[in-house]
Image (cartoon, rainbow, N blue to C red):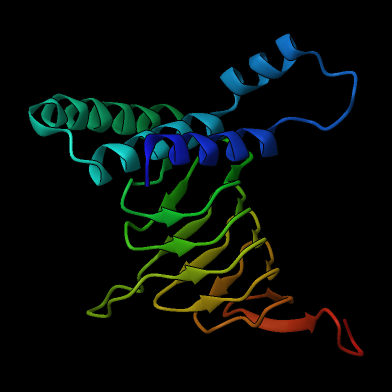
Length: 189
């Protein structure tokens, strides 16, 4: 992906953080971007993806060092760790400070929303594989999505849920371990 494509992704990320009311001024929008740690994480993510995907020759070494410094700074200052190797589509939304951890092999579509305390990772104990997440997915505060599970488009993961199995498109999953409680478009949903 080119730098222009990464910038488009970042612009989509930023748009999801800005209120849609018409009274928000451009200056207020800029201030919101500067005070929102999710924007910091998205900016560093897109920069890191550009650095590692494009060939920069000798200039690549300081660019990679710069990315590592920025990534670690956001991790320490904001408590958000989203490595450049995570494949996340445009429109990433991280609404709150703290404890958001994304495994480097995570794959996610567009408009992923992550609450505070979310972990997208492996199960550990000798198992491998990271989550694959569809488009327009919301993962609630404190939720853990662990292992090589697939979360379908438009799914909702409830607060503090621990997802160990696939969640179909349009479903809502809650609990420990998570279970599907409704699917949009069905009689119950």
